[in-house]
Image 1: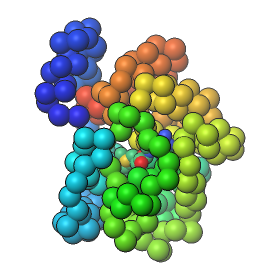
Image 2: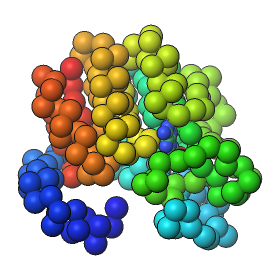
Image 3: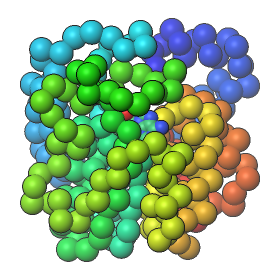
Image 4: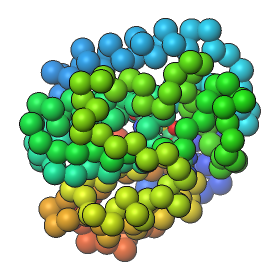
Length: 242
Ligand SMILES: C[S@@+](CC[C@H](N)C(=O)[O-])C[C@H]1O[C@@H](n2cnc3c(N)ncnc32)[C@H](O)[C@@H]1O
């Protein structure tokens, strides 16, 4: 979301803008420099794969949509420190977040990751599903598949479930999880649905990671309904411990 849309939203909803500002003031980054080379390699691969890609979808430029580097570093720290048995994430696209968490599990020698995604492709003929009207331009580039950034050596711990989160998530979460990450469709309805589902499935001591909480008021509405400890990484990302 760019500065102009943020300013427009702030004018429309001054209360919400104040909440976002206070989140920024309370923010506490969790950085892990040791994973930076791995993240940078993947960002270079993304830049190369997107070098010839142009065009728009729903008025947004096509792009890779990967998690920001500080968020990727936080996911590494979280998985390395918590040593989760089962992690569930929504939103894979090219697979930066998945690759980082699987590398952390490999270093831990334990854990499985189940990722849910309804991918959009740069080549229009590969798209058969309808997307939320507010979706940005995150796509998989020509000739690549969803999650292509995940190295083969880490795939043994990975299950990729392709489908709409609202349809496939309940079954995926039926086995519970230790960490849940939302990074798929950032509509109010879907964010609220995923926070509720993810939280209910989290085992005691688990952590819910909410990205793009500045896209809708869902996180602010949902967090008032639960008792977990909230930690803000920045204005767009929060962790809630159960
Ligand atoms: C922001 S990208 C995920 C980026 C990824 N976490 C990374 O670090 O590279 C969001 C992904 O969610 C997918 N998506 C959009 N709507 C969805 C839905 N309703 N259910 C599941 N996935 C969805 C998009 O197509 C895209 O692949």
